[in-house]
Image (cartoon, rainbow, N blue to C red; front, side, top):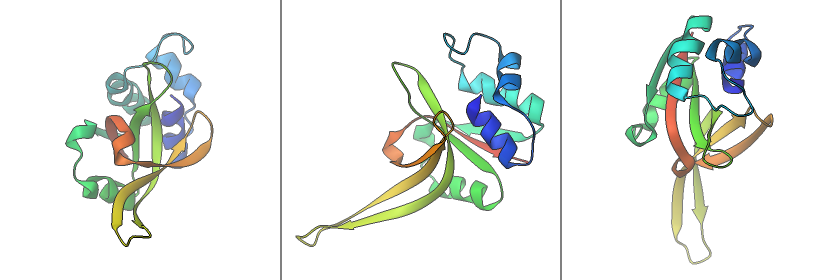
Length: 139
């Protein structure tokens, strides 16, 4: 629900995570939400936004994420949370990190700057850290 609140408010909405959690049901301390159910049923219903999802392993096209962001939409991705529970973060931007070592070898990695609504902080993650679904939300 925290990612839903963040996305909604960034698109000019007024939903908060309590409203989203109430609709989804369950105890936030003991009952993690299924992201498919949350984004396609609960968030979509309350916000009226268009929501499409892809499994992380099917999101090989970086252009999909960049296109959504450039078009004014938002993207959330699933990353590892605590224990066996996944966690949703919101993509802020995508960039190519280039590192040149002392020996001259060069490596490039696609990186995602994400906002973690659980902590309110930003961090950079490589694609390999995306373990859950990728959700595209458009107004």
